[in-house]
Amino acid sequence: MTNMNFSARSVTDVAGAKTQCAVLPLFSGEKLSRGTRQLDKSAGGSVKAALALGDFSGKAGQTLMLPGTGGARRLLLIGCGEAKKFDRAAAMKFCQSIYKALSGTGAKDLMLHLADLKLKTADNTWLLSYLARHLVESSYRYTETVSKPKSPLKLNRVVVNTGGKIPATAAKTAMEQGKSIGLGINQARHLANLPGNICTPSYLAQQARKLARGNARVSVSVLEEKKMKELGMGSLLSVSAGSAQAAKLIVMHYQGARANQQPYVLVGKGITFDSGGISLKPGAKMDEMKFDMGGAASVFGTMHALVALGLPLNVVAIVAAAENMPSGTATKPGDVVTSMSGQTIEVLNTDAEGRLVLCDALTYAERFKPRAVIDIATLTGACVVALGSHATGLFANEDELAEQLLAAGTDSHDRAWRMPLWDDYQKQLDSNFADIANIGGPGGGSITAACFLSRFAKSYHWAHLDIAGSAWNAAPKGATGRPVALLTRYLMDRAGK
Image 1 (cartoon, rainbow, N blue to C red):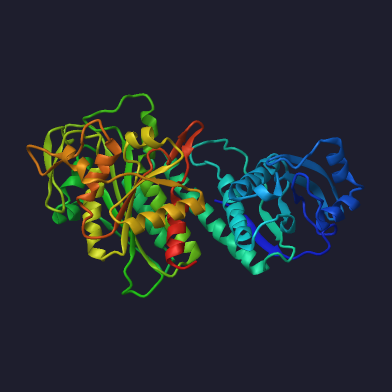
Image 2 (image 1 turned 135 degrees about the vertical axis):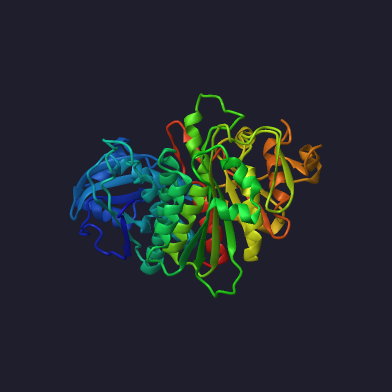
């Protein structure tokens, strides 16, 4: 994925420090810092000249590349706007500006002079974590099925001159955490971007075993259709009934704490391709239905980040993987299936299949006696209509869990918005021929989908993340890796890191 390395130290001789690019944050209307003055003097006043000419003003997001001096082969000025307005949103823009300015150059390393940034210590570590995450994310290139992939980012080494503002160890730790999250995001993007003829349920099972290989903390078990049938997972199996690809229930165990410590459980919707089944989708944009395993991809990405971080807690990841296809053996609208919980379901629409695989996975999760269960799914187009692509829809049966996830989303800028889960909506799922229907009509589609799932999650604290709008972009087309950052931050908070 990337071999980018991050380190930190305190440098006093800024002008003499060797780097292919010295990154200098400048605020509008502020005096130059000591380090920038050193470099400006070494460069014959080129920084002050650029300011005097109006070529650079320090406006937020503004960049200017100048010839190098001393030990620096390039000087990159990054505008940070007004110092009093330099908050986390501005810090993110600053990090993004670094990548944009360097992406077209041949610079293989950079040195960021952190002392120029007027931030509190806590926000400095946050900025460095986000910087590492953003640079790693930006280094992602899809290469699997293209003969001439996009050129990789040449940058492979980032050094931060802390200037004594924070300990070098704290700076490096923050960047390593950001790198781990970035790698997890890229893993999720990679899996979701793969075409459905490669990324099948069996392929996902292979990837789980690959993660466990040589990893003492990770173990994997894969339930085949025969075992699922014995367990009574008629709902999940109804989705794969029309496909030549066998369904898989993939279970990954991460043990970072005592064996008797209750785990957090992540459940991912892994529909590796969703044709809609007999309720066939329109042909336009059906290719994007390879992204319908975005929930499963985010679970894999979070597990990769978790392993890299070595968090001291226990996590069980369950991926309900299946392909939804039309055929003579496919489930039909009006069919009634029996879930693992014993509840019968009238399948009014075979394109509402995600909830059918998730409900059996949620029932299966009970055996782990979880502290909390979070399912992640590209579940409803209705959520896209409600929230667009910026926010993930969050539903929960417990307020504290909802608040924890919302806080993790805000901190990681992988944000969610809480939606109602009122009993008033449950009646829309009434059926004359089964205990529950799998759709609730046109009104509040994302809510009734969550209400459906809630009936299978009554024995534990549970949250549902509908990522139908946030899991991928239509233009340019590609997976986003969300909500890996949110989930990882949530687990880091639970582990006290």
